[in-house]
Each structure stands twice: as C-alpha cells, then as structure tokens.
Length: 348
Image (tube, rainbow, N blue to C red; front, side, top):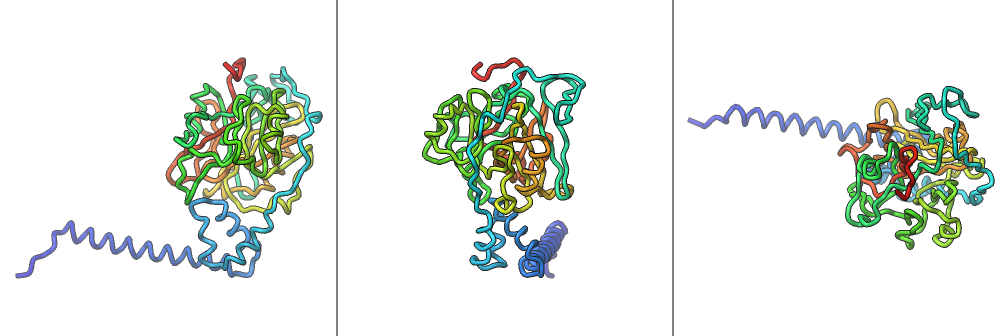
C-alpha cells in the first residue's frame, strides 16, 4: 500500500506552487508594463520611466531589459547640469534675531509657537512633502561623524540624537552599489567644523555649504574654494536648483519622479529644508524642477538638491515626518543637515 504524504507537506506543496505561479504572473505583468512604457507611443512616459529607475540604485538595471543602451544614453544625455554663477553673499542679510510670534513673515509664514521653526506641508500633482523653515541659520550644522567614514553609517535619528538636535534632513550621497550600501562611505568631500574630509572626491554638481556667517553657498566648487569661502559645514550632491535668485533652466533639471531632499536659503538667511515622499500610492515623487518651483515659492535665493530616493527623510521634534521609501526600512547615511536647539552653539 503506497505511503500518503503528511497533510502539512501537501499543504506546503500546494502553497509553494500557488506562490510560484503568482510570482510568475506578477513578473510577467510588470514586464508587460515596462514594455508598454518603453515601447509605447508616449516618449514622456518612456523618459520618466528611464530617469526614475536610473536614479534608483537597486533597480537601475530595469531599462536595460526593454531598451538598447544607445536609447538609454540618449535620454540620460539630457541631464547635463547647467553651469550657474557662484553664490553672491550680498543677496543674503542674515537676521540674527528672527521675529517670533503670531505675525506672518514677509513670505506669509508664521512661527506660531515661537521656537524658530515652521513646518509647512507641501503638495503637487504627483507628490506630498514638507518644508521646514529654520529662521536662524546659525542653528544649522552638518551632522556627521568623520571618524566613522568608511566604517559605518547612521540613521538620521541616530545623528539627530548624537548632536542633541531637534530637526534634520539627510545630506549627501554615498556608495550604494545595487542599493546595498551601508551609508559609511560618502561620495563627495565633506566639511565639518571647518575641516575638509575626503578632499579628493570632489563636490558633485551642487555643493551645499554654510560659511562662518551662516550663508549657504551652492554650486560646483573645488576644495581650495571651500577654504577661501570659509565653509564650516557642507557636502556635495546636486544639481543646483536656484542660484542668486534665478532658477536653473528646466531642461537642465531633466529627471524622473522620486523621493527628494533639498536645502535652500531665503534673503533673510532663513534655511529651507525640503523633503518629498515618493514610491508610495499617495506620493509617486517629484522631479528636480518640482523642487526648484517649491523653493522659489518659499523665497529661496539659493537652493540645491541633496541625496534622494530611499535616503530621503526629515526628522522634526520627536519623529520622522515622512515614511522611508526603502523596503528594508530606515537607511543608514554618512551625512545630514541638522537643526540645533535654540541657544546651543555649534562648537558646544
């Protein structure tokens, strides 16, 4: 008499078979969608798909499944960064004692609780996010632990708590092969308390650095220029969104929809920190041009894009204001821009 399989084994076999078939159908469906996007009649949809995926470390290979490398390169060629003028510090007059209270500022925003911070929800056709206005720019520092470079990265929450800060956003990029980077190795040079680290790695397409007078400098600058400008805190990434009150040419801001982080500064010195949620049902993400328009709306004289994607996060008061786009949860990063408590000196 033949032996019968244990009921549990029969169940497991059926479950695995159903799971395998479901995964195959899902893969076939997703591949069909990619083919439709890449080979369909809409060049806009094709460009958006290519740019969005190529900006993502883990799935940057997907366009190669449907398009020739020559076709991908043609789309990517449109992303050349625009050369913009160096930051003009005379356009910024830092207000060392920002007005607090119930009266709106010149841009219509009110610091109702008098803590020097204003968190404003933002939204567009394809995204939702938050803009944090830091009225006193001297409270903003680069949050990083240089002795840990090449060894380990930190979550934004860990960096906030290490510096006893009240708010912050992620900063520059890091080595992230196939989306598996541990946040330990920055892509670009870092300035922390006036000292330049990883000098030979350049400053990317949009360095963001605060000088001794808390003026934000953005642009393509070399290590020698960082010293001449007396940059105290900064990191590279880019592209530059706004320089000296002028937005970059939209053609140079060619990009896909993804989670985004950016930093800027108003003419009164207030620092603007932007985070856009992405890869979610209620927020697909934003383009570089979307970031530029938001920064202009909030009065930015200078602004640059920072690392985005699964690293895009903002911490405010006691928690994150947006959800991480990474399937594995909160990612570790090497750098951040943090907001210190009122009355705390950066060198304390």
